[in-house]
Length: 117
Image 1: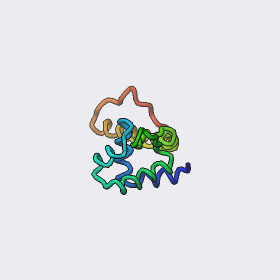
Image 2: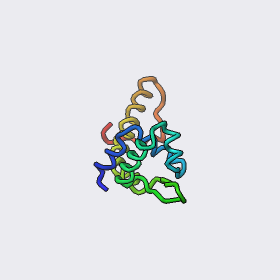
Image 3: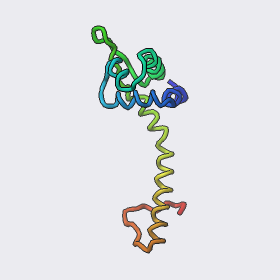
């Protein structure tokens, strides 16, 4: 699946809520309907978008469909976000050092200075 389809699938707050529920454990559609407070047809549409994006997978359990997260696409998003996370961590660390210096506190020995400071 493309990153664009993953982001598009996660753009909707109802789908993010479904992903959060499935993070806890696999759930039947009825449980998802009840937890999200959506109609069954609306929940099914959201689940189809998540399934088409590869974020969830379904299995039959007698008469029920049970949905579970597929961790692979989430790992892909996490890898894509890693450089941005590093950038923000470096900037926040630099801000923290400056605030500590302005408050007259000694510098944190565990902080690694950024070459951009």
